Image (cartoon, rainbow, N blue to C red; front, side):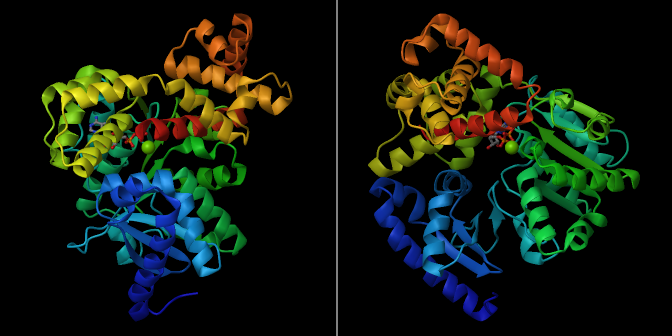
Length: 451
Ligand code: ADP
Ligand code: MG
């Protein structure tokens, strides 16, 4: 169904007003006023409902935390399932830029989609260069200057929240500014569009939209590992573009040699260009990034407090931003300034919750309760979930096996060690486990971000 454009804005607004009414009942007051009250219904067409958030933090928070609730609420009101897109759209500004999870539905052919593809905060200028990422940064600059020449494909890999998407989008914006045709997509989006196209028998049209582009930016290929047909389609697309000297940039969570499910032919294609890692940001880098982000937010925050955040939140950069957004929201709500004491207190208390977050996230992922994971049940699903929790506590938190065994219901040290080793061994050979863990890690990081 397509609503005529005159009515579109009006009805999207009305629908969103109703949705807000219902959401107000479903989330707590502080969350509602911080995250939802400044949002707007932008458009509803082709079954895609677009919600505008006043800034990138809110857009990302909504995308990560309330996406499914909002989607369900809208589906209830509209009487059918819809796609939800959350974009940045300040009230006094017409330009719409998407948050990282937005969907581009037509390959960038409509002017609306063209406007929405990139996050305006993810530029080269806003990227803090350090020893951790210098190589990736230089390569990214190079593919803008000399696309399709030496580094093709360029593959950037790192653990989550280290700036891959940021760099990818910076490449996209700089390339587009030079007049080239660019598509940015994620493996998840590619897969869902491919499946939709297959269902509608429109594979040719789907492939067609990539045909005359100059640069393809493909984010998070690890989310496609178990999607055989999408991978095959991607492989063909890759060959076509590469054969025509079009630039391809891909991001992943690991080196292609550690991507278990890829066919050898795709793996070797991925390895024929340049592969660069981004190392986890060190303290100085984290601090520099925090300064840039705090500046962009325009929040007064003491240097010492920034140092505390940079020191305590070392897992990934996204966490830093989440912490900043959290402290900003808190200070706005309470009308007080952010101080080193409040930051310190919060982070010290928050740090003890990492294990809880891991267990809760794993439990949710497998549709189990935390008690089941900690308990004595030994059926396959519970054991797998428990072992994944053990693995993640070790990997993400560097917990000792003694601590892990204690937290997980006083199991023996050997059980924790075995659980960890079992998953560590399987992650590189079992694509299913690899993907499950990638997804759980992503969720854990979201949770930490919102601590
Ligand atoms: P990834 O794609 O690797 O998971 P992102 O690119 O989404 O990570 O980065 C997470 C957040 O951290 C983003 O908001 C990004 O702007 C920020 N970030 C990461 N690295 C840097 C950096 N070197 N300079 C500035 N911001 C960074
Ligand atoms: Mg990313």
